Image (tube, rainbow, N blue to C red; front, side):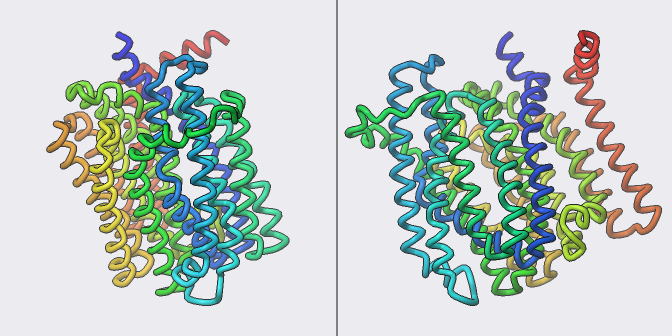
Length: 493
């Protein structure tokens, strides 16, 4: 009965709504911040921010040894008692390895500054910029370790508060600095944001497990199993971050900083922000799937229910995004970013496939098949880079949007094929039916943007948005008795 409740639609919707609400607030604040950044720095300035951020993330992913991912899996296996000696000891192990990787990442960023400058930029010497960014790499490692502790011990409220605090701090820090210093303030803002996020995370984690230096001798050896598990995640992270850095560096050379800023804005609206919505599933869904990963029937049911809820929640947002982008782009950025509309509208279609892919992709992680995970991630990013380069050369900025959608379609086919072959996963007829209806509505919305103008555009567009929304609400109502729960809640107040 308890498993049924945990894997039920109501449970999935409840936790997706909680974490989705936090991510929604983060998106709203991020949109406000990006609006100011776009006005203050323009497309070229946003391109510069993108280059520095992707490079910092690349170095960070390359040097953290996957501690932030593998530590969660280990901590989740310990007893529920937070004061259990094994947990307290393993927290020391995680912090020791986080400190070691922080020092390693900082040193690597400083030493490789000249190489990063020459490979990332086609103009000027930016070595000093990367040396100044080195502390941010170290702070990201510390933050990753403490975040893993909070995730592993299921401190979801603390994680949510840290995320909200970090995004609010980013808004309060970046806007005044960019206003007074322009592009000169980009590097200080990145370092300051990393510092504030680290302080918020450390403060929350240390309240749960105060820092203990006693008994730290020889502690690194206890974490070797965690590090070995994290190596595949590290390699996958290097490939992913390296692909992002390669694409942005190539666009900077092939086009210019302005073109890169436009691409980054379109990518941010579709992939990054939609990814924040998808990440709401990770904290609750991953442990539930891990608990039944050896039971094929139970795993299939868990994955299919999660996929149903994901496609029903995300699809109306995507249809609305496709239709209202001509209004949203000037509102969220500035009129200089209007050329990104066509790219973003077609790239939004990719997120339909992402909603169908992510729940299935977690099967590999739940079973602990790190090398298969590495293979799938590597294959996807190779295809992604090649499609972006081909798409941009053929159709410019629009071609990058087409490439994003085709890459996610390829990922969907690959992930589902492997899951069917290796794990016996089979997509339910219900998921097929819901996804077919929503993808059809999404395609009709996109074709409306390229074939209809004037009042007819808004009539058809708003109509399709309402159809998508009402269909999702109707199904969620049938599956979760949503209205009855809301009615009871209001009656109690």
